[in-house]
Length: 121
Ligand code: HEC
Image 1 (cartoon, rainbow, N blue to C red):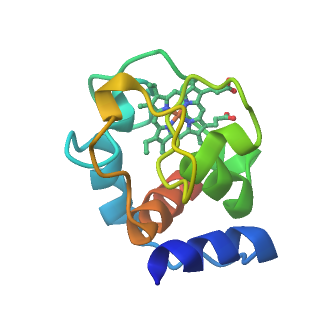
Image 2 (cartoon, rainbow, N blue to C red; image 1 turned 90 degrees about the vertical axis):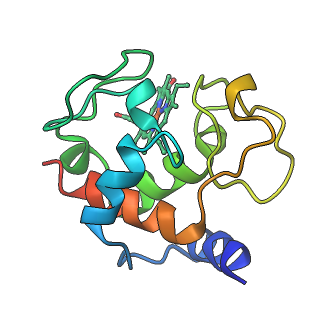
């Protein structure tokens, strides 16, 4: 199952993203998917929030694995982060109110958005 697969991939340190950066950009801006623009500015993306850090050059600062863990469940590296966990497989205790009861990202959507973030060099 995809959810378990991502967890395993994150644990064993799989490196190559199977994601599509074009779809990943859509996840980033889409209200129905990540809606990451609510909090993050990024190159080539118009209106954006500033709750989170701008993501310009994030693909140079962070590797695929580091990007993946932050998108899937940022509390694993930063327990008090104000960013929702988008693909946590258990204990969804820090999902922001706006996200409660809504589907989080699928494993494929996480891979897609990670692939897009990796292009931001
Ligand atoms: C509710 C606001 C919010 C939303 C929505 C959000 N983020 Fe974040 N994000 C943050 C904050 C705040 C941080 C900084 C966390 C920290 O270090 O304290 C962060 C950090 C990050 C980082 C690490 C940046 C770095 O330089 O270390 C990445 C990558 C990231 N977010 C990607 C995403 C993606 C992709 C999405 C959509 C799937 C998303 N974020 C949605 C608030 C948000």
